[in-house]
Image (cartoon, rainbow, N blue to C red; front, side, top):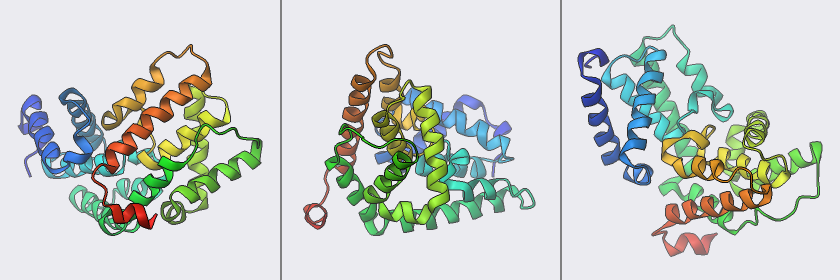
Length: 252
């Protein structure tokens, strides 16, 4: 229950980097020490903004950034998280504990036993052709894109609900345009990445490769940039599926 101001900042960050690297090796193994320090440092500041001023409460907040996405507090898919974060009628410790338990319950439903649901979603993603041309536009394109999310990961799409999925599409469309993607393939890829990795994936230290790929060669033709992002994203999927039990492959 030490308060943040009682510890030197550098020592505190080192301590938390070691902690999360130990307990979340799969999530943190792709980020170098500098990226992990950026995650922890940003997390401490965001936690403090919500009134989480002890090691216990701040560490739980950073923990949620790792398992839900580092911008989980503004993710349109996770409106319940924002509501619990800002329930200031509750003391900070009770508030973060309640949010953490809700997050674990949510992940249990979405991921399934031994993460089987998310594994099958990644297998579907690996098999999908993200560079195939889209023929729809406007509202029809939006409906088809939401339907694609439901095919790739039906459990997550259903649990979030139609409203959250529509809000995700709006944010992802804005983010895609911000990165210079105005065509349907680019919008679709960014939407799927936000759906799987969380809003803000493009600046998330755990997915540093996404931001690096989006920033590289911004003057190149859009379709080439989309293809590079798809290629790098599929490498991440392959790394995540490494060691997958063959029974999961057969089931899918």
